[in-house]
Structures are given as structure tokens and as C-alpha cells.
Length: 338
Ligand SMILES: *Cc1c(COP(=O)(O)O)cnc(C)c1O
Image (cartoon, rainbow, N blue to C red; front, side, top):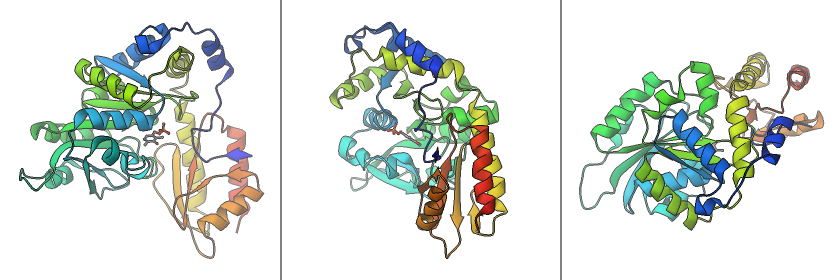
């Protein structure tokens, strides 16, 4: 089976497994796991932040960020496609007691003007606009990304109005290998950043949340209360360190393969739209009589697995375990379908 369901399906590489086996560990709840400490220091330094905290998932890092930045009855502002709204089970309301103000962006990207128009004036009967969340790359937007030139007016605006700005950077490195921008420069534009190690970076588990010292101190308390305090987590952190050292540049290959498949799909008579392919996510619509489900069944018969993303919409995600050879096979199947 060729699996294009998500970039979370990857297995650790031999080098990564070796690094995990050799990890020095301790009890991280007591702050005594040297490998977790090294990973946190590494991510903080990468984004030019003061501190970081290692968590089991990107959902947890996002939820903790929302919790630390807000009070109940506040409001968060984000694009309607955002992971924090779509795929975190409504956790912003459950964990933080906040309202959400959804904006209609373009391929998941919003602008400073849209945020400015969404910020609520202070009245007793309105929630307080407190936090904006950007997603880079944007999953449901088809892997679209913000450049720093697009982010700068947003951070300026947010800080002018006293809002915090959080980056859901689950796939930030997929964007950075395209733009050539540095994580340090990204770090300057956000109060907090969440990075997934278990997507394109290829680690089995884990995300890191980074920000200033006071923010991360609070984040550690909420990680504990959410059940995310792990003990000899250094075995997992070692995978993250290995990924950051060895598996960032290769994200360009994933992006390139998605673009190549996207170009093929654009020529296919059964495809009505392909979202602009910017990184490793490819979202497209199939024409009737196909539905997403019937199209995916056809692919499954040919040994290719992917996800439905709407009644007519299909998502492919390229990743570490999707090789050049597999890409050739996928393109052949797509060209032969009618
Ligand atoms: C995957 C993902 C997350 C976090 O997901 P987990 O599965 O909880 O690690 C957050 N944001 C985006 C955009 C994602 O794609």
C-alpha cells in the first residue's frame, strides 16, 4: 500500500531509532531528563525564544497556548480552516472557556485588515478579543503558507491592540524550506509557536511549544494538568533532536513530489480543481459521477490510500516514507484512471 493519508504515518528511520536507543534519560516531570531538556533548549534557540516545553501532541501544545494566553470569556480569532477550530474537538471552549471568531481567509490565510475588523470593542456583553492564531502551513488550506512579509503586519496589528499571537506551526519547516526564511525571524513575529515533530519531520511522537520564560512556566503547569507530564520522555525527545538535525532539508523533496502530482492532476479530465500546491499537502476536487469516496475506492484497488476532505474533495499528503518510486507509481495510476 502507498499511504498518502497523512505525513503522520511515517516510521522512524534507522538513524533516528539509533539515536532513540542511545538517549540519556531521566524523569522529566522533575526536569531531570537531559535529552528532553536538550530538545527544549534546541527548539527555543532555533526560534530565538527563551524557553520551550515538550508535549505528546500538537493538539496539546495548541490547547496549552490558548489556555495560557486567555481567560474565560475571552475570544480567539482565527481562520475558519484552523486546526484549533476544526480538529481539536472544540477544546478551546472546553479547556479555556473562550469564544471563537472565525474569519474567511484565502486558502486558510488571513490578513491584518481582517483581524482588525474582527477585534471587538470593550462592552460588558462582548467577549474580549485576546488572541489570534495563525497556521503555517495551513492544512485545510491545501498546504498554503505565509511569508514573513505577510505575517509582519499581523503581529504589528495584534500587539498594537494588545492581542497575543500564536503560531500553529505544525508544518512550519515545510514552509521555511520553500521561503528560505529562518526560524529565528519567525520567532520574532509570534508570542508562542507550536511545532510538530511527528509530521514531515518523521519523529514517532511529540510537539514542542516555545515562548518566553513566564509563558512556558505556566505552560508546564497546564501540560501537567492535561496529563502530558511524561517521565523518561528522552527516548522520544531524541527522535525530535535527530529529526531537526537530519530531516528538515529533505522536506523540500516532499513539497516537490506533491507539486509534481498536482501538475498531473490538473491535466486530468476527472478533476475540477486543484488548490495551489505550495508544500506537501495536495487538495483537489473530483468531478461527478466520482465522489471523493468512490474515487478513493478506485485508488485503494490500485494500492493507494488517501483521505476524503469533503463530498468531492480528496487530500494527499507526501512524507518521508513516500519515495520517488512511489510517486512514479501514483502518477501512473492517476494518468490511467478515467
Ligand atoms: C497535526 C496538526 C496539529 C497537531 O496534531 P496532533 O495530531 O495533535 O499532534 C496541529 N495543527 C495542525 C495544522 C496540524 O496539521
